[in-house]
Length: 333
Length: 276
Image (cartoon, rainbow over all chains, first blue to last red; front, side):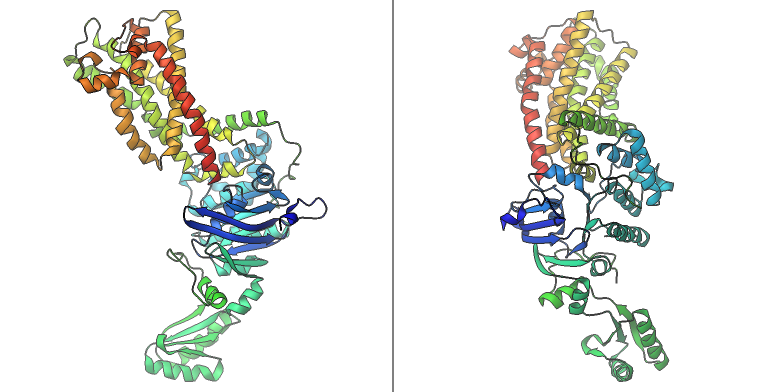
């Protein structure tokens, strides 16, 4: 295996190639013999619950943590022995904004540009272009400590893209973000991909991986448990559904009969829920809702339900995701 | 369009020494710029000594009699030593704060000289402590302190102060990386550095202390510092232990020991933090 790690001089080496990557903290194995291959120019999502080892993996790939064993090579450069070259090719946007709180947004961008080797005038020019690109003009002279979470994240992302990185590593970039900032992150990832930049995106949102990634790697307890295209993942996990929760047991029976006439239903009597596949999303929701409301049968809820990370784990591994912490506060579904 | 300029070539890199100097200056500038934006950071090295000056000069001072010298002239060298010692706490808190911030991660993921990160930390803290020192001395002069300095003594004093600030800053930066949080650094400072600064003949003569604090003071580095400043500014010679008989030499030795221990340990600690 080790032979395949020689830096390739001809052709384009994979953006990321990791074999047996392992990181322990005391007795706890955060990343356990993880293999990962990311082709140049693709978006790959590391999908997993809190504590799955996503951040540790990302930190090892970004040269911020040293693997206990195994190797990782970025565009032909070893993350341990050629860390400096790796740092010139990648940018990392961590879970928490990596900015100086006591500098303004613009000062931060200028500092990062200068640290990347630009002269003052060139650094200012880059900073101003990024400020415009990321719609932070109105807050550019505000201290970062006075910015909102979403504004910080946008400045942070801008700082990551000062030099054209060949690989952009994003560690849960949308966790806890407001919808507008999340949109900026998503569209940035799409633009990067269009420019041929490789993106490694860690997330705990199935929807995010599905929307952005060419390939999804599901990880849990530091190990890969499944991998494939979003379409394969969707095929295995199942589609979005409309769930109708009846007001009482009688209503449940009546609704089940009514809905079975028009839809393919799955009955969950324990939860008084009738579940209907909804490949057309809102249109299906509207059809079901109309039918239910015209029937005047008492219901508690009619809701469009997207598959979650838990559904994916259940479908792919037959067990729920190991979730030591609370689910994200801002669920996307 | 996201990319603004083409990716720099891997081989047109500046020399490591140049890169180290450039990155250290950029990062020091970044720390210094934040000083006026977090005024509470300067409080440690300015307001605190001023409060002590006012307290001891006008509240306790009338009850303290030191033979052969006015209490004002006795007090100021002590205050200088004390604020220098408190600089350790300030440097530690600032370092601990910085290391727990995400921005250090960003610096570390950049292709910059990594030693420049810690160099900048020390340089910025050094400047801050010197600034505090200037404010304290200026305040003393305004209040009527008349150091009896000859020109050679002034140079000697300035050199000793700079050496002291340098050594104590390294100690603070090292402690700052060792503790878990800025609060822990405050705690350590209060338990260890606070008493050492008080026992150092800062406010009252060591000779009059109880046996235990006197024994500690005899080998307290801050006592050597205070005694040196007093000897240079007031011509008062201390005695009681080897270091107090030769305070200036003792101070230089202490600084060399502190630098000799703290610099390699701080660098080692920093490297350890880098890989975990």
